[in-house]
Image 1 (cartoon, rainbow, N blue to C red):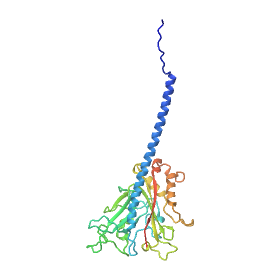
Image 2 (cartoon, one colour; image 1 turned 135 degrees about the vertical axis):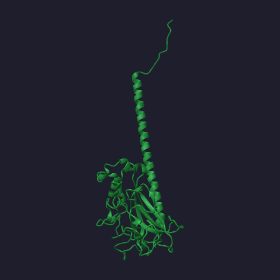
Image 3 (cartoon, rainbow, N blue to C red; image 1 turned 90 degrees about the horizontal axis):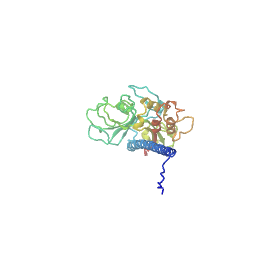
Image 4 (spheres, rainbow, N blue to C red; image 1 turned 90 degrees about the vertical axis):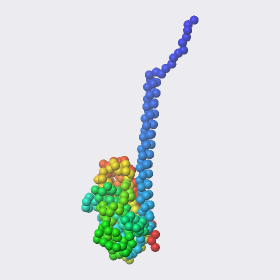
Length: 324
């Protein structure tokens, strides 16, 4: 009787190669899926960072603007009409300035009933200012800074108006902010270091006005309807609109400071658009967005890192001044 043995079945070489190929394809698909998910997550986290920074800045501004001293007998350092200073809509220029400063962003300064930094007893009135630091030798170059300088009340002894480092109270007209606190009117370093970085990712800052007449303007009064041509305690202004461009720290590292300057230069100032009808909301934000997304029109961005440009976010907010 012949002894039988069970048949032994195995995989052929072709079957093994097919299995390996299928497995390789599956691994590749999973790897690509994970890579795309990681990219989306990373982008989302960066946008979360810029969202959080913009929210913090706007919340701080809301407090400062809400407590602004709106009086006709005090000065404001604002853009308006024929009053020009570095960063005014009519004075946007690339480079120039002293000590490497650039004049591509707005400045704003005013008195506000908020606590501020002071070497004396706390005061409920401060000189508040916002700017983009334009001093190339500064650690906060091309970053948003806020000045919250606590002011002592009138009656202090040894008042030295000419000394920029001396303690000063809140002054009334005709004394001007630019004459007493020149640090508000430029983007040089503050000798007393009262400026603090409030937005390390903010590199572009522009503001304009919503008038009570319903018009958007680069002056805090209506040049046609109003009978005055002074700020007049913001009597004509319903709200201040602020637009900022923000980039997260990691993405900013992909850009040079010259790239930042070029972006600032290409992002337009607010303008009244004479001859083109009334200014509409969203115009400035849309133009800034095109700068970072349209390298054909804005060729200076063609050589910039695409990952960094895609991380830039544009924000706008209106602050109701609640004027009477």
